[in-house]
Amino acid sequence: MREFLRAPFTVAALTPSGRPLSEAVTATVPRDGAPLVVELGPGTGAFTAAIQRRLTAGGRHLAVEINARFAERLAARYPRVDLAVADARGLRDILTQRGHDRADAIVSGLPWAAFAPDRQDDLLDAVTAGLATHGVFTTFAYAHTRWTPPARRLRRLLRARFAEVVPGRTVWANLPPAFVYYCRHPRPATAPTGPTNERVGRP
Ligand SMILES: C[S@@+](CC[C@H](N)C(=O)[O-])C[C@H]1O[C@@H](n2cnc3c(N)ncnc32)[C@H](O)[C@@H]1O
Image (cartoon, rainbow, N blue to C red):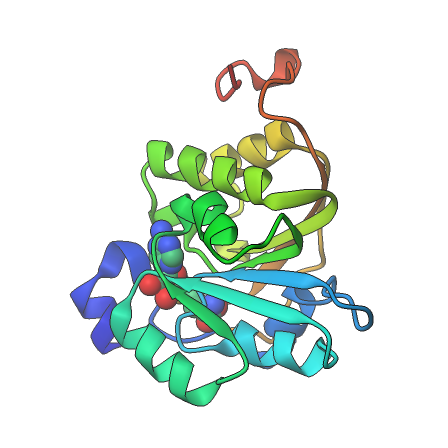
C-alpha cells in the first residue's frame, strides 16, 4: 500500500497477486534442466516464490525490479534470486552484463494498464529481445479490464510480437480476478506483422 501511494503508475496494485494466479503465471517455468527464468516487476515476491518452487538446483532466476525498496526486501527474502534493481526496458543489457544470452521463460508482474503506450512498446520490445526463440512469455491482466482500450491495446501488441498468444482461464480466486496470457514464438523485431497490426506495427 505504501509503495502504491509513492509510485501509483509503476506499482499500480494495492495487493499482491494470490497463489492461484502466481501458479497460473509461472506454469510455463521448466521444472527440470538449467533454464534461465527472468521475472519482471517482482514487487513483494508473489511470483518469485512460485518460480522458486518450480526451479530445480540448476535453474537460474533473474528478477528485474525498478523499486529499490521492494528490491531490498526481495533480496533478503530470496538470496538465490539474482536481483537487478533496474528498469526492465534495459533487459537486453542486463542479460549481457551477467553473461547470459536469452531467457527460456520470462514471467511478468508488470502493470501494463498503468503504462503509457510508448512504455508498453519499449517493454515488450525488451521482452522479445531477451527471450529465446523457443521461450515463453507470460503476463497477466485483470478480468474486469479485459475490454478496456488499454487492455485491447496490450492484446494487439502481444499479437504483433508473438505468433501464439493464448489467454488462460479467469482465476476467480485472485483479488481482483485475473487471467494469464501465454505467449510463444517471438517474432524478430524486423519481421512484418501483417495487416491487423497496423496501429501497433513495428518497423
Ligand atoms: C503490480 S506490481 C506486481 C507485483 C507482483 N508481481 C504481483 O503480481 O503481486 C508491479 C511491479 O512492477 C514494478 N515495475 C513497474 N515498472 C517497472 C519497470 N519498468 N521495470 C521493472 N519493474 C517495474 C513495480 O515497482 C512493482 O513492483
